Image 1 (cartoon, rainbow over the protein chains, first blue to last red):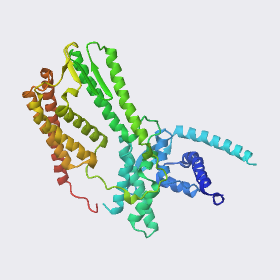
Image 2 (image 1 turned 90 degrees about the vertical axis):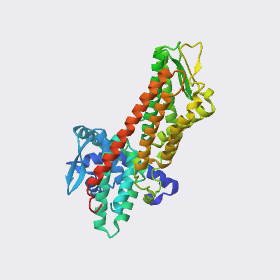
Image 3 (image 1 turned 180 degrees about the vertical axis):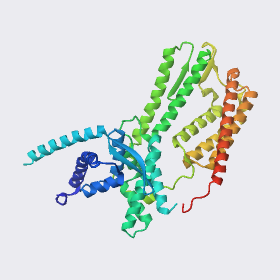
Image 4 (image 1 turned 180 degrees about the horizontal axis):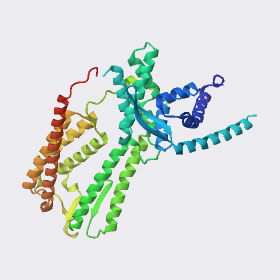
Length: 115
Length: 323
């Protein structure tokens, strides 16, 4: 679809796609964090499932979710490296369930609108 | 430090210096670990030199100001993170001046001082409610000025998606970063004092009296005899502030100069207190000058001792291999 639009329209589209992804990435991160993960491994896990997230977006997002008490973190030493591992908190799990329900409702609505 | 590590360090420094202080060490360590690991992983998969790989990874992460903004806490703030420290300093300074004048007022020494747009008016007719109102209005003016500066500089923060070259990252500072705003504030204040003392003592709107019917100028008519001593402190202070404003960091030379300036200022204050007259209330001002001199000398000696101790322990620690 991107090849069919040009110039300013392309720019608008990219901006809107970014906005769409922004909310989705939060849900994706909360969903992908099953056990403890650190930033790099989480990014790979998301990429393996088809969602490419830039490092400059993902790592600050993890911090932000932690500041909102949706994630907790701790430093661990592995392979001679100190890494910050994240996991979902109880509150994070509640928010994840809520977001997932919203996502499913939205999906149903959009599917209905685009029939 | 290997060249690719130097680039990573430069980038981490530029991102984290824009963050609130309590976040810096933690974010720096995490960024260093993540970026370093990415460099090693990509190098294992390609033949590209480590330096090029590091620069590519840094470029993908984003321009430092934009990256720092993504790390910044979501909660709203009146001014952006880089201005928060200078704001706190200025608010403390204004509160300190207000407190000093309140102390004079308590002793029924009435004074007024105007440093546009700030006003400190403490006369006999002033009551406690006026004191509080004065403090709040001065703090409010400072806040409005900083909010205005922040909004004027807003364009600096909105650089998402702008192309940038990581090779433009400045080298790591040798010394500790210095707030340019504080250096500028110090320079402006010192210039103001020099101007008033030399050229416009009557414009020095600080009137002091024991009762409001006969206001006096604070400076004694004979104060000019002490000007060479005051210049001995004020001129080097101004030069130091200008230098720090330009350089933006305080290295070992600057630290030793600061120690020297502190001792010099203490000596001059003792001399002025012992000689005089400087002000019409020297019976209050001289002990204050002596007290400030003792504090300045104490701080200077403490700083010097700390630097000597650091230098000694640095000599005792062997250099790490491969650094």
